[in-house]
Image (cartoon, rainbow, N blue to C red; front, side, top):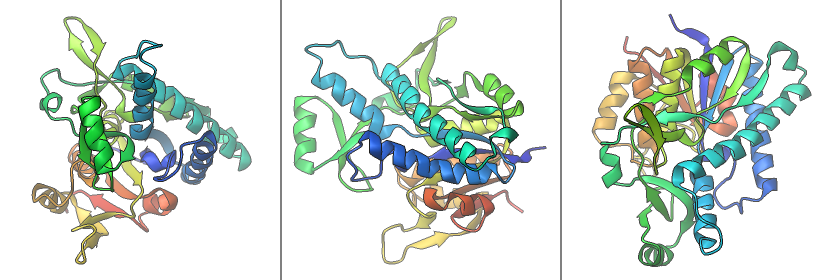
Length: 319
C-alpha cells in the first residue's frame, strides 16, 4: 500500500534560472528561495518529501566553461560535470529550504535537509547514444547554432520552447544506485534532494560501475526513484500550468484530470514533444503503471495547488 503522504517533487529548470535570465548568483538564490516557499508549504501539510531537479542550463554552462578554457585547464567529462551541478544546485536548494523551514518555525518537525551526490544506472546499449536529444546549455540563434555545430562539432537542435540548443545523449534510466540510502533517510524524517539532473549516469562494466558521457532526463529518472521509494504521489513542477493537447496552437486544450490509459493514448499519438512535455508525460505514465496513487504536472509557482489537485494536470489510475 502506497503512502499518500509521501511525495517526490521534480523541479524544472525554472527553479534556478528562468529563461532570459543571465544566471547570476542573485538569480539563482532568488529562484531557489521561491521554490523553497512552495516546497515548505507542502511540507507543512505533513508530507514526507524527496526533491529532484533538472540541470540542463547548468551542465551546459559548465561544459562551455571547460571548452573555453581547454587550452589552459584539462576539461572534465560530462558525468563529472553532472556531479558538479548536483553539488551546486543541491547546495542552493538545501540552504533555501532549511532557512524557509526556520522562517516558518517548522524545522522541529523534521530532521533536516540533505542533498546527495547520486548515481543512476543506464544501459550501454541504449539507442540514445546514437541519437542525442537532451537539451543542455543556453539558447542560440539559428546562425549561432550552425556555427557551433561546425566549429565545435556539437549537435544542435531547435528547442520547442524557442531558440536552438546543444543536445547530448539521454539514455533511459534503469535504477537509482543509492535509492536504499534515500529511503532510509526519508523514513527517518529527512527532506532529501537527490537524483539531481537525472543523476550521474553510470553503466555496468564487468563487476563495477563506470560514469559515462550523457545527461539523463530528470523526469524519467525521478520516476525511477519515486517508484523505488514507493512514494504515493509524483509531482512534476515546471514552467507551464499543465498538460495540453495541441499546445501552442489555436485549438490547444488543457487536460485537467485524465486516466493513465487516456493520456497514454495521447502520448502514443504524438501529442507531446520529445525534449519538452513528452518525457514528463511518459514519467507520469510509468509511475502510475508501476503502482503510484497519483501524478501531477503543473507550474512551479502554483505548486501547492498542483499537489492539492486544484490546478495543473492530475493523472490517476484507470477506474
